[in-house]
Length: 144
Image 1 (cartoon, rainbow, N blue to C red):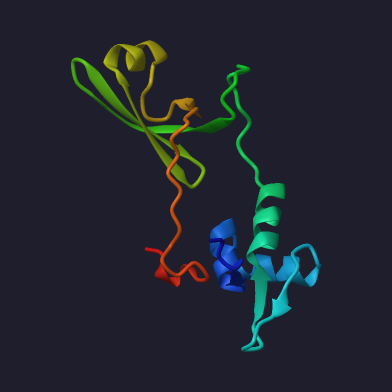
Image 2: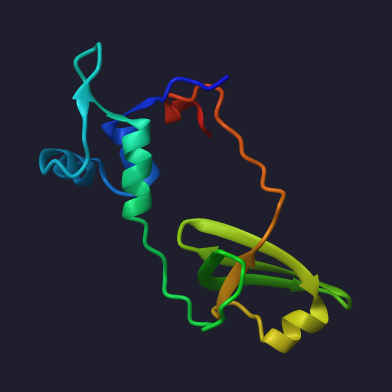
């Protein structure tokens, strides 16, 4: 059963978009982001409109690899940590606000020259992606 599309307050929308409340207010005032008043007379943004806006305005660092492949999830970032033993390596990459952790062979990590500060691209191709929703889907207050 599908849930009713949630409405997000200005501050919640700002948190989801990674911008200030004032930036969202400016977008609303400029009619770039549609809003309406809820039952409590507060400005809210429809979840579907917010999702469309987020997708249209998403920006990522340019992919420096020049590789073309079937994987569409390419996250450009900086290596922040490498923990390596004789066989395996754990590599962390900060891709914008997202932390991506990869496990690979130590040989592969050495061959790629992975170390903190190195520019890297995390390529994700998976048929298993877990999607979760917060218990109270209409507010980010419940999200840790």
